[in-house]
Image (cartoon, rainbow, N blue to C red; front, top):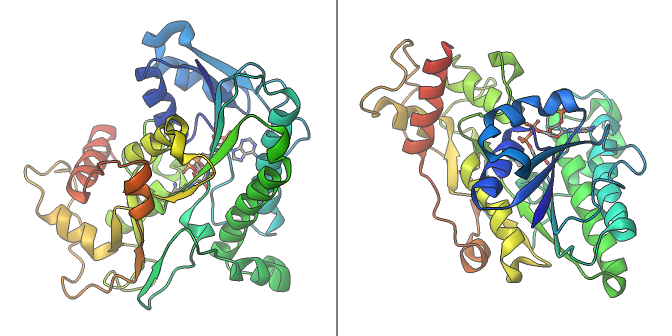
Length: 339
Ligand code: NDP
């Protein structure tokens, strides 16, 4: 069967495409333009005609996915802007919400009878704000304060609020569309809510500064010792998961019948920067000998947010990579690239 993957050239998207090809699927990789997809064709050359590019332009453009959805059996929608440098909230909100509504509308209009499921990448940012106070959250929670912050402060809202509002509003739009059209569609939706996604980057990256946002943040903290002005013992106090597992979660959510109609949190556990520094200092052999990495201030870490993982375990049951493996593979990649 053929799967449409949007954001196929992104950090997570590139891994999803690989998992699908390995699993025997054919992939229609939606990219902004053919040039953005060339690297995908290069790294997955051995799969031949099972991987095809599909240029869709900007995802917020009306009807962007009208042709891309035709004849596919499932859709994995990851495309959405991920950065913390927007001026106006609308720079993130419009493409995030427009992309989700657009792909659902196109599926409603042009989806074939074989279309069974649409999986969407939402985020833990649609569940909970960063917190330094201990809190346990589940799929029943929604991160709504950033929407209000963006409405009230506009371009002066925090950059995290702008991104979080884009993810909360996009996911809410997906569920509203689904509820409204349920009686007339033969497919359903499933939403994946990952926290910080860390891991080796196999998408097209030429320089450190062109890394995707979460990978760049990890490099800045771990290599450049830039913790955003906070103690590594207390920040960011959030969940994390390896990009390969987050990608697999999308594939499983597409395959497992009971994932339909569910939002599912993905998280290995709560962490602060010091946790990574401690794990890295113990790695042997050292995967990144060309640099001396910071040790931080070993001490009592304050991990604030606990994600309730019972739904993930019940429905997807992924065996997650631990920090040692993720850190080792990312640092080996830096060594290999000469960063
Ligand atoms: P990347 O920035 O690596 O990938 C984003 C993808 O979306 C790219 O393919 C990009 O295309 C595409 N895209 C963004 N805006 C547009 C647009 N206006 N028109 C066309 N294409 C667009 O991000 P990730 O892989 O990290 O993120 C993928 C998804 O996962 C997102 O929905 C994100 O919110 C979610 N997520 C990510 C987390 C993380 O820590 N990385 C955590 C939780 C959720 P192009 O390359 O052409 O710009």
